[in-house]
Image (cartoon, rainbow, N blue to C red; front, side, top):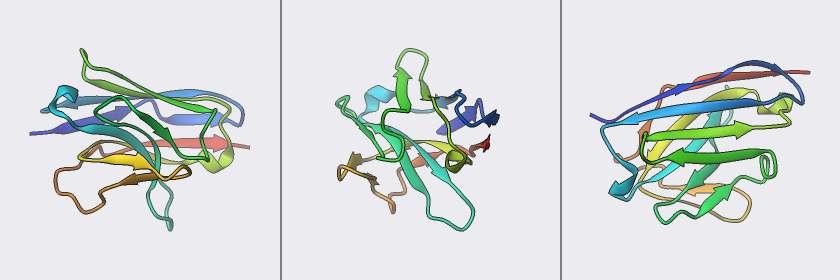
Length: 130
């Protein structure tokens, strides 16, 4: 069974930083999956934040470029998202994911939204106060 568990969310002031972590079990990054971070605000579509494909290519949404950095530890099976210079509009529930595919059109993260081989965590809430 594939499980993803996020941690590290919380309340932070604008301009501050947080690091999100995601523990992955049931699949290894050597299995050819892509990995990613997404976020969701009530009433809006889920938004891709960053992803790393199975060849190590990194993609980020325009909204977070230069501020957020995604990384992984393939030995520990962990995924991280370092978020700097946070803004109130970054407030959302953040989800980590193991994906069959991710890429970018230059501005947004692209992924296979219908695949039943995508796996998701339950999310961690990040609140940025102004």
